[in-house]
Length: 482
Image 1 (spheres, one colour):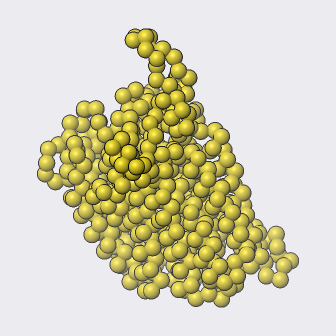
Image 2 (cartoon, one colour; image 1 turned 135 degrees about the vertical axis):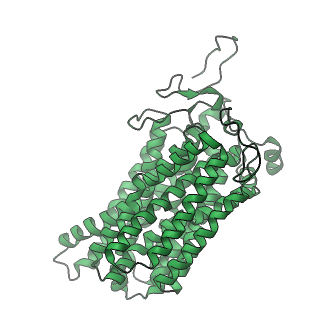
Image 3 (spheres, helix red, strand yellow; image 1 turned 180 degrees about the vertical axis):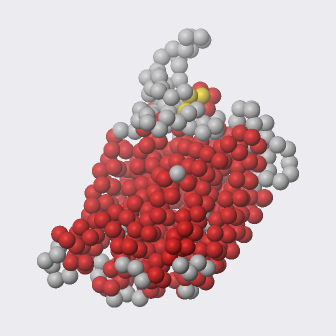
């Protein structure tokens, strides 16, 4: 709706909603200054909840196969390297999607992209039952892996909806609750649906094989339905959908190519890319590794190993949100310097605990260490995306996509280690790399913000110029379109 500005008599800027259920900052494009978790109203909190729900179900279909890999391995007579090749391909395929989807978030908004990716990824998920070789398993997981690209929309959406005071917490909560899908998948698919489907098909010659071939239909149907709900019942931004805003002159068109170029040429993007590889990349690796590791090392059943492995993902219920919250609080006291110190400490503790986990010989001890290891992994993910919206706001989508791709790149690199080495050596290498990545915060330098060591401190009480209304870089857009 549009109207007339009472004070000036000039036509008011178009926006879909004239009133909001949350307090907003008009100087930050009507972003919300608060989070009300029990509120589901449009546009802010509806986007918040659809962000994490959409990413949750994307994570669910992405790793639905993971707790069933030992069964698939037995049925198809695969070796360890063939199983790990499928896991590496499953997370590797998402790298391209995240690079691609980031710039298009800046251009067309997150809502349409969320719907497209969820509905598309549900199709190969349904086809899980047709797998009959190592090659078909790898190809299937490659296409299912496109679901992981939804993380970009998840983080971009909340960055578009919430101000600097709460954006770290908002990004961390939706990312963490979405990542929770990894833990729920282990439990639901491995310890609930798989035994249920074995019971349903108990009269078949091989109930276990029939069960794993049919069980993935459940998450696929849910994912397709959630994708449609997101499209019809949410908004891209506080003032409406991007196509509506462009049509009514409330938003300029943005070149996806220019957005990607801006994000890719910023060195801060690549420092965070490497750090995110060492937290989210570790989580993805554990989603593929945990059930296999506990089953092999401690001689557990598929159901028992899946239940224990699910604990790692369950920490997302609060751990990633805690990381974003700590980042916001540190920012309030110390500006960007506080966010960078938070990032460094969380990564260093994460790496140290991976080294402890690698040398833990008892089942109880391994579970306890894994719990604390998981807490720091996910808190570091939250603190990472407390920094992302500051790097270069007009290219936030592209930057979020590149850094998100870093997580998958890390998973591919660590996955190669687990494919080639025994578990202990692979964990030791992973822990050492994580500790080294924590040092990279020293080199992050965002214009107008303090550095981790040295430089002037931020004026933490001043309005943040980096979160004003995103506008396209006209010169760059014209150059690319020319």
